[in-house]
Image (cartoon, rainbow, N blue to C red):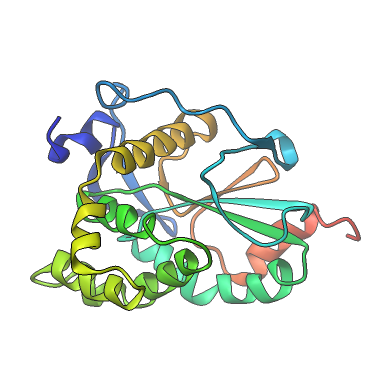
Amino acid sequence: MKRRNILIGMGAVALGVSVGGAYALVQRPEGGPQGAADTPAPQLAAAGDMQLFEDDRILGAPDAPITILEYSSLTCPHCASFHRGTLPQVKTDWIDTGKARLVYRHYPLDQLALRAAAAANCIEGDGFFGFLDVLFNNQPQWSRSQDPIGALQQFAALAGLSPEAFQACIVDETTITRILEVQRDGRDTYEVASTPSFVINGQRVIGARSYDEFAAVLTQFAPDA
């Protein structure tokens, strides 16, 4: 299947509609790409009966009482706003203190976001979240560039990806299929239809909230609340 059709096959048409602090997409009823494997069985159960996958990228202590699932698109301006303005304090007050953990899941709204997600998934360990920070903090520079793939490659080089590795990553069929499987699971399991969307111990939160708004939700699940 041609990659330009993959997102449409997943039900995502990148119209980039801004709705209440979130970036929405148009949904189609059909399912995933032909030949896509079933979503792997979960590795473990998270709080609120949420399930984690073996390949999830997780920031924070594995035994944190609060689990935050984040569904974001790397080209979504509201996602960038959350990562620049809200997440740093959430990290300081909740993640670094062991109260919460963040599970980041790609939800690409367009082909560029899909390629960026594939590049990010080639980065191992803590470098993954560092690369996300770089991309969100510099989103206009690469996503609106006349040569966005070239600009993205330059940022990937800072994360240690050689030009050859970068090119291989952004066209890797297994990686792309897996990203779209996780996206479909978010849509089907949690009714995710816009970014950023969060599921906090089973409770869905839509849009880029301020720190105070976001912390108010987290406090509901804090053991000492």
